[in-house]
Amino acid sequence: MSQDALVKRQFGHRARLALSPAGVRAADDQAHAARTMWNLLHAWWRMMPKEKRTLANADAAIRQARQDIGFLAVLPAQAAQAVLKTDVRAWKNCWEGRADAPNFKGRLRTVMSVDIPQGRDLNITRVHRRWGMASIPKVGRVRFRWTKDLPVGKHANTENRITGARLVKDALGWHIAFRVQTLHSRPEPHQGPDIGIDVGVTVPIALSDGETYEHGEWLTGKEKARLLHLEQRAAQRKRHRRPGERTSRRLHHTYDQIAGLRAKAKRRALDWQHKTTTAIARTYGTVVVEALTITNMVKSAKGTVEEPGKNVAQKSGLNRSISGEAWGRTITMLAYKTAQLGGTLVKVPAPGTSRRCSACGHTTPGSRESQAVFVCKNPDCGWSGNADHNAARNVLHLYRMGLALIPVAGRAVVRRAKRVKPAAAR
Ligand SMILES: [Zn+2]
Image (cartoon, rainbow, N blue to C red; front, side, top):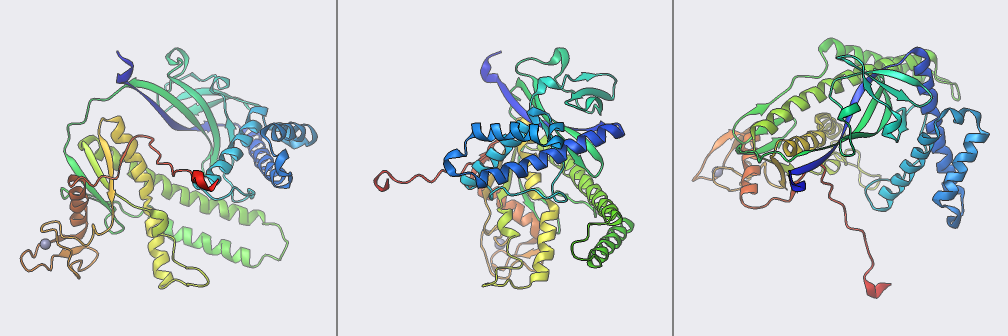
């Protein structure tokens, strides 16, 4: 097989760890140490004069800190190095305009995590149909749920292997997220039809052929009532706390319960997204979506002090619905799933897709009669139908007109060009 017929794939796989209580404590300690390391490094970086802020100096500072501060020594040296690497990456993202400047990490707001940068340290084996084992530095051999065939043991080679992992704690406890790299043959081009997709709040996903994918509420009525009750209780406990007083054990417990319910909702949403995107990627060859800038869409509820927003409560409610649908994640899943199955995902510019009539092509005022109904006001046309299908058909139309913006590959990242001064200005 020629090299061209092979594609490299990098993906993450998350598995639940079965840690003993002592293991949980050890992992917690490591995560706290990693966060402290980050904060120390951040303070060091800001305090140092510019010419002394070098990687070598930062590295030396980390080594010194691990010697001087006892509780930092629980963090494996490799994980401490990974903190530095993440910090450097965060600054680069900031300088290149992709993210805000990194900041200190608070104890309660930060996801507990520890990096294991070297895959070969993990020494993964499969011990049972449903269990694998991995060595976690300074914790020991730990079982994890085996739900996907990983390239380990005699299946591993230079092209197919686990390149590293990260321990992450969420409401269900500690998990391990493997970084997997595989090389496999390029899939046959998908022969399925083209499809346009409109994402929305009332109908989560509407396809141009009339199909819709909908979901109910993520939490049942009972669970929602319980979540509200817990949130109110937490707010009340917080109100009655005296200034400077530590967060009580009870309040922490309530926070944990809230996090548990929210995590449950998120798991259900993820499950639905996976099933839906897999079905779409299997059925259709070319999937066309709108190029949405979700951050702009949800930005302006409160507005700024100079320009306060209008309809703040309504808009923030809509923002919550937009964020709740997690379209960005749906698109990400579609991107890699279509690529894996030989299809393509294409983005087209979004403006006007909900107002244009997909039958005659005219955009007439007032044609979007409600969230759900579209009635064309062009006297020669008068087409009426579901507003979301209309939008999806417009999306597909824009693609067929050749307006595709970016053919989105599996992991394609469109980088903003670095701002370079013109030669004359230097
Ligand atoms: Zn029309």
